[in-house]
Amino acid sequence: MKNRPPVWRIVLTTILIAVGVAILGFSTRVSQIDFIRLFRDAPKAKALVTSFLTPDLTTRDLQTTTIEMPFPIPCGSAPNGTPIKSGPRLSTSVPCAAAKDSFTLEGFNLAPNAQIAIRWNIPKKGKLTLPYVTTDASGHFSAQLDAKQIAVTVDGTSSSIQVDSLVPVGNLKVSQSVKDVLEAMFVTIFMALLSTTVATIIAIPLSFLAASNITRRGAVGTTAYYITRSFFNIIRSYDPLVMATVFAFWLGFGPFPGTLALTVVTTASLGKMFSEAVENIDPGPIEALQATGSNRLQTVVYSVVPQIVPDFVSYIIYHWDINVRISTVIGFVGGGGIGYYLSTQINSMIGYHKAGTAIWAIVAVVWAMDFLSAEVRKRLA
Image (cartoon, rainbow, N blue to C red):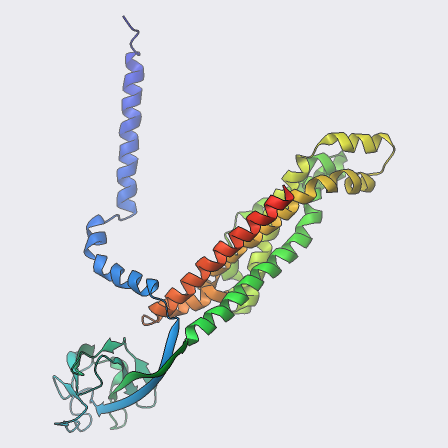
């Protein structure tokens, strides 16, 4: 008869499983997991994903037709507009409205299947653009609008609703989004290149100070070792987004604070990786040179450096690849480059196709960087 596990082990295992299930249940509540909402809002996600999968790559010149009608907010603050009965025209379900009231805007006899830009033309405050709509085959559209508080009548002059009918004409050409994305992508690539280069120059000498087999000898060397190691650990504990936020608050938005944030974080990360590569070298050549009477500098140059160069180059290329991807995220907090462009288009609520162009550009660059880094590491192996 086989030995059965003791009762206490069965009880302990049961308790541990129960505690694990309780922790997972509590985590679900804290994380506000709502799978019902996930499926309920699937149409919204579908529209977003569809926009991302259809990037804005080509365009045509647009012929714009503008129609405008006054819309007093609140009623009585200015004369109502005179309705137009024929031709391209706009019509509202009410001639005026109080602030925050909803009403229906319709367009008739406009260009069929055309993109429609709707704006509030606000006295002394400029224009407020609303999400785009599209006319049907008969040139009709309908949109539900809110009477904005910002669009109230000023000095007897009412706000107006302005509609631009955008009809493509001419031949296809490269869209402005592609040009903007390429420019932003180059900024991102060179941000990553510059930050990686500067970080490498700083990290190489610091890595030798953080290598125990090189520096940790005597009181001075041991102190330098622990100080350098502590510096690397402290800096590495900060996420690049935190660093980018700090530099953006200090220097304002743009590529410069993003580059500085990447440089600081990359210095600590490369320094740690470099130091570990130095610590893992073969001690034989070092002992041989020391036996011949070589000093500390000669030992490093002729026995340590030849062993670490392949690892160093591999780490540098690997971090350049990482920094290209991190630069994308840093752009969301004002670090410049393709991430900032992507953030701007997503937040605009009407630039999802342009955001899709940026996403595909990021994918292409990441693939290219991965292939390049793999080839370089293969040749160094």
